Image 1 (cartoon, rainbow, N blue to C red):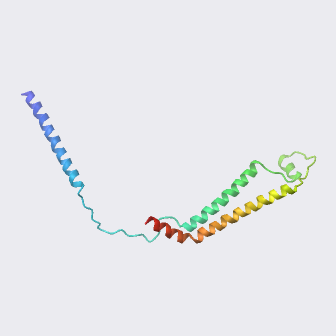
Image 2 (image 1 turned 180 degrees about the vertical axis):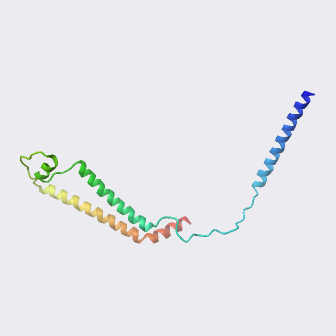
Image 3 (image 1 turned 30 degrees about the vertical axis):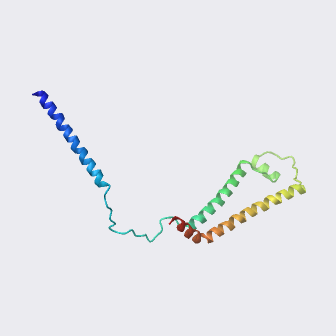
Length: 149
């Protein structure tokens, strides 16, 4: 009688598992045929989700110029240049017995002038590029939205 009860429990457990499996299969079969209905159409918000691009563009330009100025200041602090014997004495508290003035050669003057013009030209090019992007931002935005859509 005891063996009969054990066999009966195993049999009922297997029947229960088979029933659960059949229900699972049926649920998956029906799930693939589900229909979605839109109850309420999506509505675009009044305010943009992304940040204001013109303000962001100006902030990036100012941050880039500030980072350049900060890096220049940091490099000057790490490797200072003394212009007069007085500044050497004030900073280092070492008496200066004499100084040698710098005599620029024509080649050095030309190289320095080219470097200065390159810097000014690069800064002017940056500002021109910024102006083009700033003024053309609405057009660029509409082109990008046309590509995405």
